[in-house]
Amino acid sequence: MPNKPPTTPRKLPRQDRSRITVEAIIEATTHILVEEGYDKANTNRIAERAGISIGSLYQYFPNKESLVTALMEQHAQEMVELVGMKLERLFDSPLEIVIPEIITAIIAAHAINPRLHQVLSEEIPYSERSPKMQQANERISILIRAYLERWRDYIHPQNIDLTVFILSRTVDSLCHAAVIEQPHLVSDSQFEQEVSNLLLAYLIKNPAI
Image (cartoon, rainbow, N blue to C red; front, side):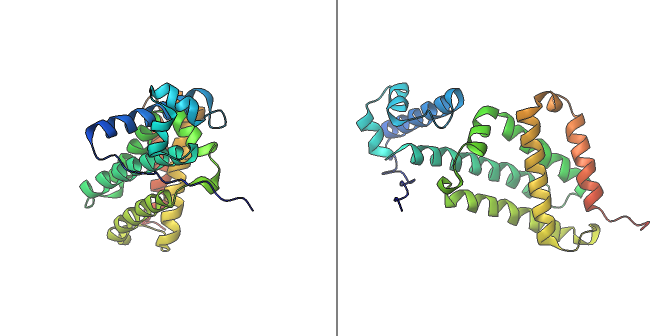
């Protein structure tokens, strides 16, 4: 069985010049992934695009997989920060306010660079995904779970773990599909409103029942 390529950087940048170099490498990786896809990306082309030697690139990243992992971790962290800021700011606000805010934030995150998001989501082998990405997903689940626990008396589903899974996967899947496949759907507020209505109908306890 072949050894799995290392996906961690060789060293972290500690000086301004090093940080600029790493930023240039990450930016070049982004451009090549967006323009040509994962399969056609390689370290030589990335180094050339970044305007550095291949040796300079290898000082920080041992291979393509480690570069893509860095991008995926960056993206995952952005998602955690977006959802986290919303939930922390609105922790005591009702579902009718929070759900639309979360949907808006996730659409915005997906829409920053939809082609890159598509490549990272659909073209990267699952075996090459970093444990930090799983940790980021778990962090989002923890935040959502804490919020739902706060409003437990007002929601209909009683299995909170299952509710967290359904909520997070539904929002992410719908926002991803809309931004990638039907971008015109998110050009106004109707998509966000419809998704909000769907989730609120699932979540909120109906006194008449």
